[in-house]
Length: 161
Image (cartoon, rainbow, N blue to C red):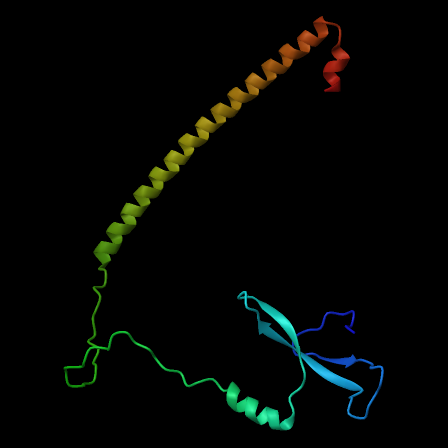
């Protein structure tokens, strides 16, 4: 009889069952453990397993130990032909920038910054013109629509929208 809760892997469940005729060899309670198993369809599921006896545990521990790792290579590595020696790193000095180069770079960056500020100001003016034109157009269209509502005598409908 299954318990209503879903057991997790490694949990032990108490499985009680009754037989019509009980004999001394029939156990009254037997414990099972739930273990994840691989199914034939390359999936995974859960399985009920009874606990191992002491003699089975010794044999199972030996059979469960993984085989020693072995590197399989298709091609053998090339042989080492040089005599082994200590690697010595040569100090490579990167050229340090001079004060004149840095001053020229700062001057160039300042000029570029001024150009970018000017371009930003130009784009701001264009955007303001477009907004101004949009506001004027919007106000003109709203006034025209309001006049049309007044002419047909439904000014209250204009304000309802």
